[in-house]
Length: 193
Image 1 (cartoon, helix red, strand yellow):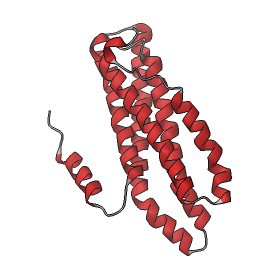
Image 2: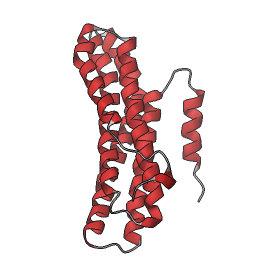
Image 3: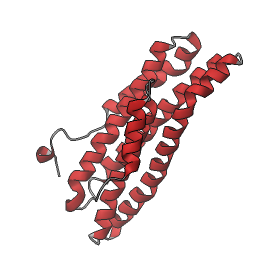
Image 4: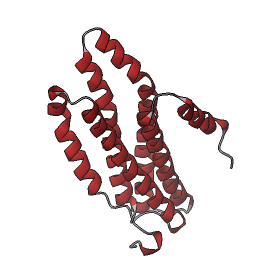
């Protein structure tokens, strides 16, 4: 298998811009982590798992497809969010514009935490052939959650407006605690199970 030119084009686009695209990068990373997680369920079903394991695999397929699509939509939205923020600011609605740039990372973090928890719960059902890939997906998703939380925290540093802090500061604290509670394995050969 060869990764298509689409991946190269996306990386070249991000690398070639003169403004950071952290949100799009985080969202695309989440979409990739969700795709990898779904592939572990595909592998389990290919191994003819039955009963609860098959139902768990089908649930992972369904949920991670939805999450992957939402991450892709958030990546696209991030590409236009700066322009929308400046338009809102110009029309006297700066706070609404800043909130737009905060809601994306918040949703990314929430999606990644939800996906990581689902994948962690799926550990007991995954087939041996895709067990390590599941752990890679959990690790990636936990990292996406942390990066999205940090992006929201960064926005609070850049725009320390009382209204934004009142709305998002507790969200950042809660997201950080939820990320810290995730359990990606530290080493594959030392994993339980």
